[in-house]
Amino acid sequence: AQSVAQPEDQVNVAEGNPLTVKCTYSVSGNPYLFWYVQYPNRGLQFLLKYITGDNLVKGSYGFEAEFNKSQTSFHLKKPSALVSDSALYFCAVRDDYKLSFGAGTTVTVRA
Amino acid sequence: GAVVSQHPSRVICKSGTSVKIECRSLDFQATTMFWYRQFPKKSLMLMATSNEGSKATYEQGVEKDKFLINHASLTLSTLTVTSAHPEDSSFYICSASRMGSMLVNTEAFFGQGTRLTVV
Image 1 (tube, each protein chain N blue to C red):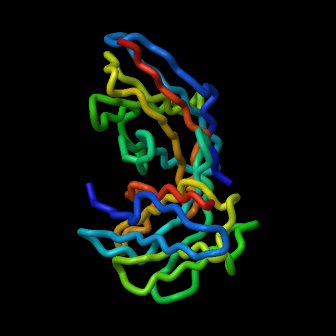
Image 2: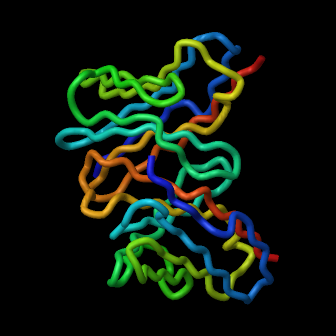
């Protein structure tokens, strides 16, 4: 089965600083990777996906992610974090017709 | 992106009663919808896959008689929690993909979730 892991439960950064949320994957075959964000008491919002092509994927709200095959990673990044980026972030991988989610990383951006 | 609407956003019910949660795809047709359960500060646990016009596929350990799923049309799936108990209190989220697009490169769209509290 395909799976992803998010090694950090929490990430804390100051506003204006770079933000990185880590994700590693374990798949057989080509990985189809996704990042979602969840605000309190809300559903998940799609940020970006990697299917094929350029290793650097740009998504919504200024986020981007870098696919690294040798390190089996798909880290989410934002050059300059905002307080409003504080949320729960999920990495996911397509597993047959389903999505398999990581445990989630809570991001707190302090003013 | 596509819009998936989930209703109600919050519900409180008495122990022993049943609660129905609706999931609608507003601007696209979805042959398949998914129901998840999320515990506080935890990841999403897939409960079942809802298929239009056929029986839902439940994940291992999920009681199909307790969590009834109906997918009567291409835009609506419902989850009914029957004989609810306090341990059923949770955040339930649905998602859907576009009809004919159950391709691996297609992102899923999520409803806003339903906070169920059983007292």
